[in-house]
Image (cartoon, rainbow over all chains, first blue to last red; front, side, top):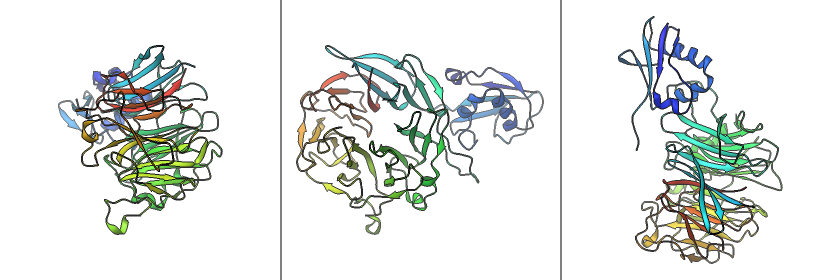
Length: 85
Length: 358
């Protein structure tokens, strides 16, 4: 199991409590989360299921991609890049 | 009928209502979030608001209670594509009600035209336009990708659609979107290399409007001037009488008088501010042969308001006009633009205005 946490900023728009999910990669873990929370998907991924340009994922303390491998006990953080005014 | 005006801005949606002594902000929604446009569906009174969330993408919301509460509905999205460069919707830039119940058309930055037949419960990409071989000529004008910003649906023949694309020209379908062809004959792009100057598929039309009472009458504010068509867009004539300048973004046509149209000129493309720091509206009442410059009630000294392509609106009866600027000023006129009254002066930058009856 992997712990998945979302930026509080995203909670303004859609329910996204921290939860546990499984998978071999960040993408697979997120896909399991989106299966439970379908509305959340389009906030994190674009039309082509790529990570949105201004969304960043950290795996524990390292920046990660959807293809990054995960292991039991890891933590995935879905964050927004800081930009704009 | 109580008239309402929706102002979609960089930091929220504002719904104004006409009162005995002017316009008041009745309510707001999505405060802090960019709202690219809003639309009140005249068939069922449903309001729509398109959001462009900086981090989390494009969303579409609907309201059944005149904007008091909102809920998210399906957003146009491109189907999965092969390879790494598949398209994504970057902004909803046009949203129009169709003829049949629940029918909607959406134009996007990204270049996709989308069709819904179930009130935005689902959307389908209009393949006939997306797969047209000339679409590859389109390019972004001030945005990262080309965009469809104007959708005109012929009220007498609702399978006849006329679009405008920045930068991609005017396109028409006579079969509800199945097949398309560019119809920009007479429009030219003075900024292009000579061999491509008249190419119908690269024209930077900033805004296109159609007169509901005479759908063959179309007006276009183009990057390098104003163009007018009286034959449903088959051919276009340049309108050179406009003043104080020919550059601008918005255009509105009177719903019952095809020869009456309004524009909001700016200096020119590389200097997008009002001429002489004075906000003015240019009106023609004779099909573009002559123009008058309307100033009363608008700031005439050191005003640097720019009105974007959806920032000039007229109501369905042709009584009310409104302009909203990137400086957050909103002016309304009830006498065809002769006099303007400020309805709001401290809004966020205004992207789009649209009237809604209550």
